[in-house]
Image (cartoon, rainbow, N blue to C red; front, side, top):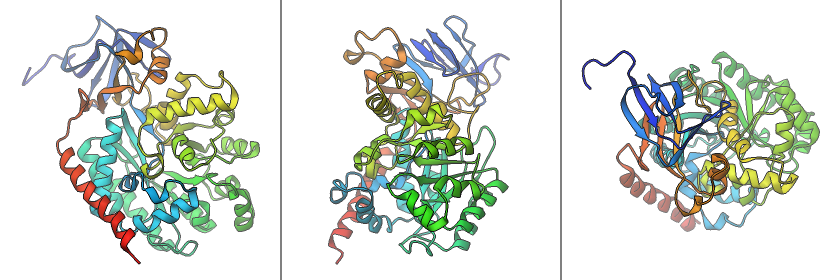
Length: 455
């Protein structure tokens, strides 16, 4: 139909699903999702679909909200599976990789973001955080936003930083430069509206990389722009002792005193005590659980059951591909389920609770409650259609979410952001993947060979 259309016609209907898993209290067998002007207008059972200008078939598949990745470093896919660092713990791993990352510039930031975002889209992810905390060259966050705009993903970049007065490494900056460049990004790109494609957040890579004053000034700047704050915390043993030495208080108290309450989320949260868990909950600070990265680096698992029972908002993060190896939010959900059960028994977590962390929990961390993470009228039209047929799913018929998480890895048929398909029939809807992969491979090889031959 061209020109005009019937008054009740919508832009898109995803129809004929085996199940629509809304994460809003109901599952709909044989259901559909209607989208118009970028938002969900209705969900319902077969036979009641509105007329649509475009339809996507979900027969033999389940529909879920688009997955929300609460912690990532897109640039790190240029050092994926870098062998000299593969058997290292966190500090030694950073020692291997920081000199390579010091070569990051606009071109490599753009390419790594484009490839990383394409990887996520093909894995059913529609919204992701991205933390760039080293800035050896200007324009890195801007380059990643350009890549997200081209692909149609929602990207929430964290303008991370390292205070050069605390840790003098390549890419660290002084306090005034950090705040000036951050404000420029807020002015140019930050959009707090429900339909936002880009929200800037701010924060140091860790407490060791900042001062109390810079934490406070970061909170003041974020408050001015209605923005979020983010850092790595409780990723290593000894952080609490270092905080007491450097700040005179435990880590969460440092954040609370600096004005971070209710506006922040942390990555990892591995080495938290019961008191830390209670403090995070009381401060309204969320946690991005990154199980694959933590395990690859030989660390422990965050006490997710205790965090959730205390009322903390817990999302899932892939972390950077230099540690996790791949950006697959489904795998993070499955690994979180396994770790919770290994730690606290088979009743500690269900597949549906793991999916909730990968959707609603991630939305909460990013300050997008009531916008993404569920399929209900008025929410943003972000969803994923997952094939659930074949040998791996044979016999799994009692619950679509248990099957999705236990019997995969599932294949994404379609990924939709703001009512627009960005993956259709398992392929990106945007051209240029092969050319960018070739360029990405050249840069990655150049980076790693350069370091190997540098005296």
